[in-house]
Image 1 (cartoon, rainbow, N blue to C red):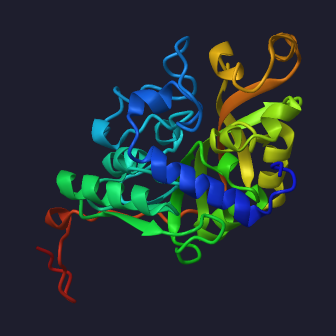
Image 2: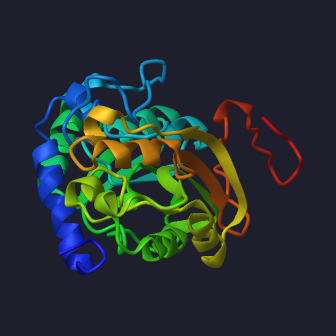
Image 3: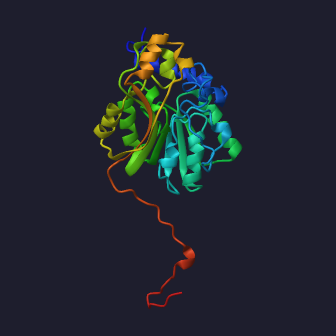
Length: 296
């Protein structure tokens, strides 16, 4: 049965099972494969992932090498913000976001893989973070109240969801008026070879579940978002030693020399409205006045 004929529930179960395994894999293997789902490459060390080492709040134990961007680096998180991370994995982006929103903020990670939730909670406990929590749930219907988040981030996750339109609409629901998202994801320009499209590993590997770039942006516009901006874009090259598993030599040559592009994009967009900023009051600067006008 091909990906085209599998139901949404079947595709989600493929991802759930694969990411249950990936939770215990070494980060170096995940980085050198397609999101940990395919064989690893000996040609390229980090096919999609980017280097988090320079980001404050980064914890190596929470980095499984599964991202395709640095959304928290572009997310304009302010101190005191409530941040939601979609597909939070072992907590990597949540902990970077926690550094940005501070102790007065809150970070909620949402994931539908029990193994990932457990790993993330263990990491948060080791770090002593009491304002980072991880909730089991589907990002098409987040276990989060309406109008509750200032910022939503996600790293290489929407491509794993069959109904991306539903996810984008739910992001709109949970954001406060004036809130925004910054999401890194895989998109396409042109068509993948049929053998890649129909392979379950390549779906879980963040490739065959990707949609056309123009459709991705269209879904964001249709959901009601504004200020849509591509903050970063980079080409993704699938190395030949991985393609060899799926395509013959002629098919690989045709694919690599063709017009199909696989890209990591980081997209920003905001929900209409005015964000309510938290105002800090310095009590030492306040004066108290009597009805007679005497102040102290």
